Length: 155
Ligand code: 4NP
Image (cartoon, rainbow, N blue to C red):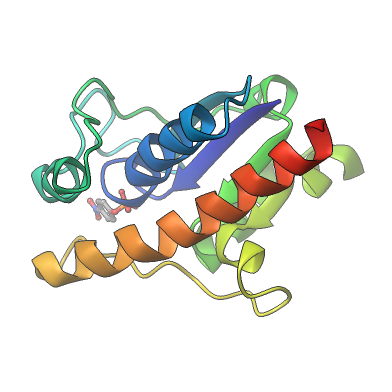
């Protein structure tokens, strides 16, 4: 199972989602591949935002090895599941999908904890540090659910 986490810049939210999901994979002993990307290329090649690296480290996760990249259409072939952080990322991904199978791979990540509600992970980029704490907690709950579901299916 290959999972891709997608936001706009791939420096704030999706790097956290990638780091948290990799940690959950260790916790549940899952053989999965996790990556992240942004729908925009503004920050391609950059480290995660320092506030994301800080909140991750505070929670025992080092995401400093990550570098931002833009989503590519062949990601639809390379990944089984593509999680969008917000409704705008979701619409952009659906617009890039070539087949009904591609579209089916895309899901709003918070629907894992609030099914059918299409809630967005708020963009913390222009806000303060507390926004990053909130994003971490939301993503931690969603990734815990994703990981426990995979673990259950595998058993
Ligand atoms: P992200 O946050 O999509 O969670 O990585 C953002 C990062 C950069 C920008 C917007 C959102 N930006 O406008 O540069």
